[in-house]
Image 1: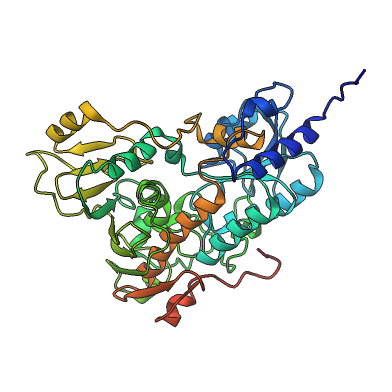
Image 2: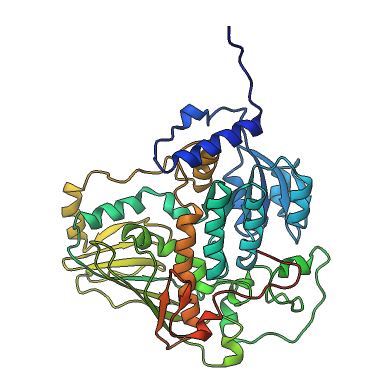
Length: 455
């Protein structure tokens, strides 16, 4: 008679996630086979960055064991009340050394520290959910995606709209010829204007004031791999998005949401050229902050049977031309994208392809009578964090793993480089990770890390 062996929680997770990684190439994983819903198989999850987006991501994992919080400033009080057993750390490296049973890590820090924290977590065999954009530099995006494959961990970038069914519907509609031949894609956001806490920093240089660092904060840890500068409330909290040393501006902030449906539906891959115009005019400002408004023009080559694509990004409340088939009174949403076809257009909102509609509305009503059958598998849970957790436990692969999220981030960050080298046509060689015609742009693909920091 065979005896039953009871798997420990960590052995179960290791076995099921390894099986999921192996099976992802064949897309035949079944969560029931691996017992992903068994209540005894909860993950031990730690969060690095417990302000901003961190609490939302933590709440998305609330049914697991939230064992540790790490923040170089004070931790969100509501999270402390909800998860009183979570141990508190300032330095993520100390947390990893002491918390040996962490299975998964949420990274929700400012952009400039995403890569170093994520890489260290993966190096230690932890599954990672990292906020968008995945990294601060193009080089980091490529290396983090490669490392996820090397370490065979389950990863997810926090572009939550990718979990929605509308993102797959968009691809199905386009392939069905809903708007005829695609002519161009336009995408936009009203950021950084519109009441965002970093909007006023697009027109100023670095302050020379040196106020004291708050007692709750470890400024050295917050600066991380970036060049050291004195603390100032112009940077923290939230305002860091405006500064090139820490954030990625409106395009980095919202591009991984708004451009994601086009990147997925059209299988865009890497652009061949990028160029930008901006509202910046003073070098002492443009070297420090992102502009109040910009236009970025991408050109993507033909991909197999897919034709070349022209994609234009607008921010700061700049908008694309109004299509001739807009109804009277029709308005663009504050953020969204427009796929312009020969017969009509498809428009969607800011996060994924939510609000997906054909315009004019008469075309939408007509098309709704004969929508194509679902072709691309839907994500089982529209809660992006749940998708990651299920994959960690042996369920279907994540919808936005670092292989995908890294490539999407690269596209957005190439636009950032164009913004920092305005009025220049940049030619991109993705295979060799370099621009073929602009050495100044090549210098912006990565930064020299401060001593004591590594990727």
